Length: 214
Image 1 (spheres, one colour):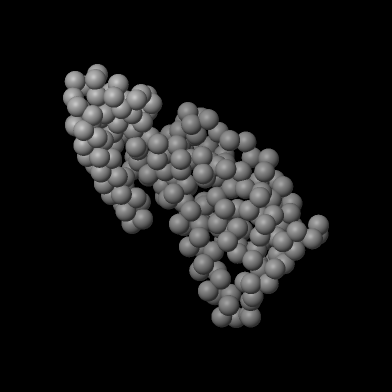
Image 2 (cartoon, helix red, strand yellow):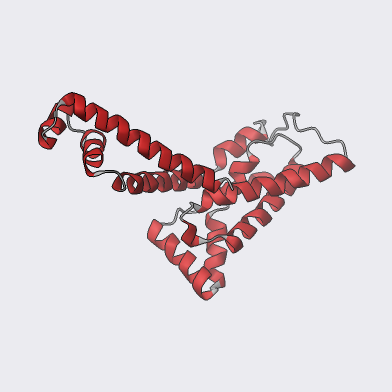
């Protein structure tokens, strides 16, 4: 398969609803349902394209990287722990990039490969630009939704007044003086609660991101 054909196929992949995706994970991890495994690998194939977009090289090498990245994706699906609470896309992209980097390290030892040559498609468009434009935003959507969920979870763990202060100002988009009045506190006290709440949420999310990198 040519690279352009592969990218065209990836753009046809439909996004799964969150409930549908979770059901696939449960069917695969709990029942070993292989069709669910196949659909998950297909659904997350755009992650391979996302990782591929950082490279500029001959088309044949890029297709080799696609194969290596897909192996990394399969390994990620097979080893993913749904209960850890880490978004699959964040977990998988490290395995995909790792497979690609390992392949490149082996490749440059045996042949002289240029990763800076601006190879073009048949239409004359640089392949790396075509790759970047071809990936549906599966990874971005998954990461954003995951981080939003984690932020909400973090806010629920805040002390009551800090949580109400952040909810009122940032989620309900009320004016600060309205929130202060509802909480029966002064505007300066509200400001302190906001700062404390933001600092706590940032700390919780920072620990989460560090855990995902392990």
